[in-house]
Length: 305
Image (cartoon, rainbow, N blue to C red; front, side):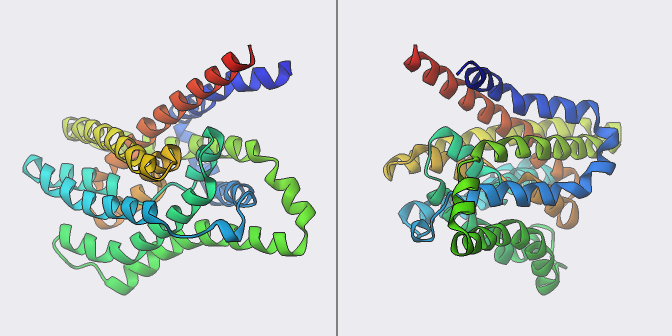
């Protein structure tokens, strides 16, 4: 029991610790970066083993969250356009980018519905893969090849989202006992995510530090805008989720973003400085996640006592 309580107390500090380590050791991320996709794959595989095929179904919450994601991205772009193209693109990409691959992990740990979140995560990522070429062509002045860019984004998204789900479903058919054993080890996926976060933060810090000093004011502005977008999305997602009896899945689905993919899309198709938005979003969303885990653990301990 004492060991379990110690882990409960330390868990809220794992994500901030991973971010701090990424900042301090960012010069070494080149060595670890190739492992990130494999870590994310394993993490999602463990999480998806908790999901039954019959539980994956679209609902009103799925469509409402998806509508906010798509329409909200357009609203944010035009709202911040008077402050500069790079600021507008930074705000837009923070809303447009799909749900994080780690969102089901945090949702499960907070007590939300993992199947609902996984359903929305799949819908969110597939929609972005199709819509991104059109959106980026509109905000970057054209010149984005639809087929080529869609294939590039799809190759980034599909293996990390679809293949772990397929493998989990196949394991359920082939070996239900092994499937059940992995499903009961959900905390593993959290610590794998912490390692992934360490790598992603290190990559983001390296990029920001490579920018010229003249870009610092713009980058600070974009980082603050990203914080506002983060808070708004968690709040709106929570309100939508409440309508369907699952505040946690709604908040994590809309608020927790695939920042790795967002940074890549911004660097590839938008003004590179706009990538500071999703880079800062990493810190904002994981601060929210850490606080949520802290208060949940505190509540659980008070109930035990």
